[in-house]
Image (tube, rainbow over all chains, first blue to last red; front, top):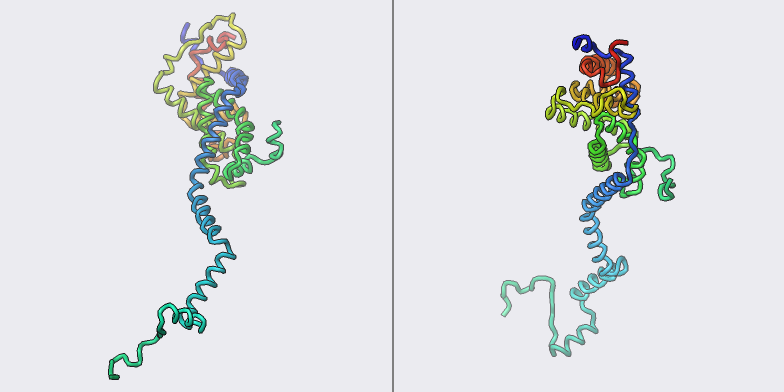
Length: 122
Length: 196
């Protein structure tokens, strides 16, 4: 009778069923592991691409710094700039001689406004 | 073990994952070698389909690699996380199967005669069990699979499913009762003699 067969599985039968299922334990194949390793490389590549712009910025600054000669170059550049400023403000006598030869006349440069700013002197 | 992996001897899974986040691909490869056999077994026992089980494990590990930069060692076990993700992905697939094929339409074993070998009997039982799991509520199916197919203890299952031990006991108990009822009409093909 069909209805007789519709009884639920007993605990023992269920345990037997689970035991059968537990025997299934497939080993990963080499092909499958190769697929997983390829995924790892893909994700690692993505991580590196995300990190790259920062690296590029850093390398650009590093190149510029190297072109300036590093610390030695930068300090030399600072010294040259300071000397140029000083020469502009207070030219040494030897430099005046050179300019006299070039322009055959002396040129007075004042950092301050002329005393006769209103043009009162004849 | 491969010479390339010697430097990682004894390193916890979480440390390998953090090393991968810092650009160490070999650490992730070793982690894949460690984790894949068990994850593949878990997926296969729930799905009884090798190609699907491989897809699930590949998907789960891909998620693991992508969250590596956010992984905090000590906060969670990689193995617990993986059990959870594989279980979720498997029940997703079982649910889709259930939508596509009704439990009554599921293929009968090819040769259900008493002369089938033990191996074929195991295969038929595994298929029938996967079909039955597909018709259980998702959380019941996960709890039953983790308890009875993976052989895990209730506290570990509670951690994996992020519920209390009592809730695990309730889910597994209801799940077993439901399986017993679902499979009632298939005793003969499962090799159970109803007259004994």
